Length: 413
Image (cartoon, rainbow, N blue to C red; front, side, top):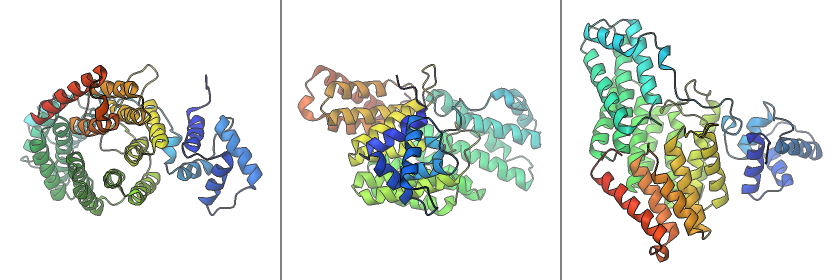
């Protein structure tokens, strides 16, 4: 049993995925800094201690190691385990009291604070709450917020409520898209963009453009992905959404087959993410947590055919989003990781394992249907038509057809 710390295993796995010796890794490390370093022998000794888990890289070497591997520090050396959002009991006002105040037009700062906490919690519920339930709750609160805008508010309160409504509209649009209701999702996305413009909230505007890029990606319209991402980057500034926009560009360039542009986009996203503080609430869907960078890289390198690196990132996604007792904290990311492992297994000729990963990915209770269908089709292509008559392959294809059918009818799954 390998009892080394996860970060030590990660350093070695990153090195091996690139086919590097320890000497190669030390030379690469030195090439990524202009700061004076110890002599090669001393640096190699330090590297060996890092890989063995004997010593943890300090505040200088940890980001340098991450940069050497094209990653971010907090992803390779995470600070704390993930949890499920904020405790609802932390809210100063409970849901019933907030609704009572809204009906009575009692819109004070405490009410606004309660609404902030409610919206944050709903956005934190996105990864794991059943889609149907989240859609109902999101729409109900969005309706309540829009009625608040008719009340007498200060200018600051008006902008706050408008921004909260914009975030909720983005959330509702994401859930609608996950369910395959493309028409509703696009209308809600446009409403969110309008609210972001009116509130002068660049984050909401940028996320609305990111959603357009996401929709285009699942349609296979890769040029539109890049165009929508660039529109988002024009208003994102240094916000975390810029990382996701660069990731969408990387995904599109990978599918176009332009490896150089993939590397450029991933590195631009990495630099932004490295410069940002780790969000207080990692579960909020609109906060970019460092662990997501492995998820982005996994997709791009799977498409580029770099099996070792894609396999490494897929394993990290599953490990980082599974609790000690086996609970899946981010089912949608884990499903994508399993599909990645399935594609790699198929490329290596193990059809049974490939289909096993594929079928397991379809069993997730919380999933984004368009994205799941897109990645599942990649697995089908990797398996190849010559295996279509095998019973396990037929069973998988039948499940995928059922999922595709529910997608085209816009059913919540």
